[in-house]
Image (cartoon, rainbow, N blue to C red; front, side, top):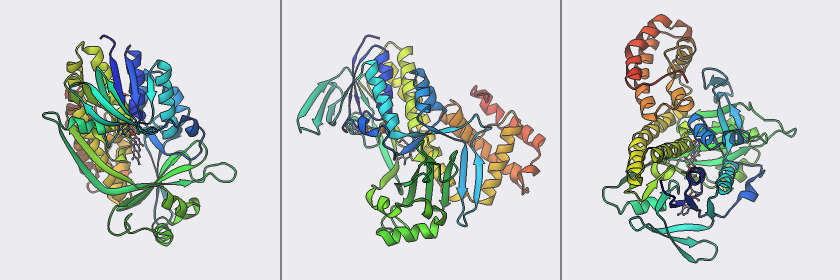
Amino acid sequence: MESQRIVVVGGGLVGSLLATFLVRRGHQVEVYEQRPDRRALTIGAGRSINLIGTSRGLAALERVGLRDAVLAIGVPVQGRTMHALDGSLTYHPYGKDDSEVNHSLPRGELNALLMTSAERAGATFRFQHRLREADLAAGRLEFEREDTGETVRVEADRIVGADGAVSALRDAFEATPGFRTTYEDLGHGYKELVIPPRPDGSFAIEQTSLHIWPRGRLMLMALPNQDGSFTVTLYLPNEGASSFAEVDGPEAVTRLFETEFPDAVPLIPDLVTDFEANPTGRLGTRRCEPFCFEDRAILIGDSAHAIVPFFGQGMNCGFEDCSVLVDRLEDEDDWGRAFAAYSAERKPNADAIAAMSLENFVEMSERVGDADFLLRRHVEHRLENELDNYRTRYSMVTYSHIPYRLAYEAGKIQQRILEELCAGIERPEDVDLEAARSLIERELTPFLDRHAVSLSY
Ligand SMILES: Cc1cc2nc3c(=O)[nH]c(=O)nc-3n(C[C@H](O)[C@H](O)[C@H](O)COP(=O)(O)OP(=O)(O)OC[C@H]3O[C@@H](n4cnc5c(N)ncnc54)[C@H](O)[C@@H]3O)c2cc1C
């Protein structure tokens, strides 16, 4: 394909990674980002918001040679530790063995690394440029400079909307024929807090775990950072009992934590100050279709499919979008066909991970402490470890590249299998493995074979 002038709107995680891919394909890439360049401030800033990187994201990074550099700024996480109200802990490993781990990555540093990589490859970043209007058919964009208030008009051969969940470029898509979009609010928000390291610099709680305090409609989670701290995310309903609307003021915050998360209280010394200072984030699911407009523009990452964060896949899915887009650009010599193929492939997968992320919200907040649920999880762990024809849905999503939509469908079959295997047993050891093998062979394997899904990954 001939070199094109490509404008990427949004220099977040996905826009910055895609810029590297596109420059390497010989295009002239300009990234317009509304925020200032915070790279000098970000590196080594200590407190950090983090997120989980898994196989799909890492595979895309590998393609541009960034996997090792990204892993070097992260902390490996091997399983979940559940904190019960009485302070007792239950641990559940994520993968089949210690080779299957997740990586807790500092968002700011990761973004900085991706921007620098794109710049080194030859992309140009224009910071403090906020997209105000776009004429997709004409390839014209209008930005406002946040520092001077000046209007900047730009023309592009191709336009990429990587401007996140509240996407201004998606607004321009709304004026195009056949485009549909919906937003489903979760009714919960989140707030970030910090568990600092101990005075000697060590981690205050187990460092190789994602820590969860599941309390029905409320939930607390903590992920480790390299400096010995944990980024804590509190999820509360927006309205009603124990909600962000109700819990305001130092006393209410302290009361909530002392009642619901007593073992976390001594770990978070700046609880009240951080609660009051940090913004409350909104959570919801954005769906739209198609992810492209003719041969002119596409949406990628959260602008196309913002999902709730309970499977830890939003960024991973966005990075996989980049890989798929580049593959389709390699297959096709026509931009319109490549964009349409990208959209057709990603839309069902985005819908599937959106649905699984919503299911995981219920699972993590309500079911993770429930005895039947735990029995099924432990039975699954046995099946995964002792049989060669079973991998959990979690594993397919997190450690393989099996399309999300197939993992989702396979997961529905697995639910039925687990229901049958767990009926009438109380302990995971009671499951009859030979009966389980035949049931899986009969119910699940034909589906996997039909879709050429291999469980060896
Ligand atoms: C609490 C929480 C936890 C999460 N945890 C995980 C996790 O563990 N694993 C995971 O994979 N994902 C996780 N995610 C999801 C992940 O953060 C997103 O999927 C990811 O950031 C999407 O990247 P993006 O580049 O598409 O969007 P963003 O990261 O939102 O970047 C969009 C960029 O566009 C810029 N921008 C916006 N509007 C304009 C405009 N008008 N003009 C110019 N620039 C603009 C923004 O400033 C920003 O830099 C989590 C999300 C949340 C909220």
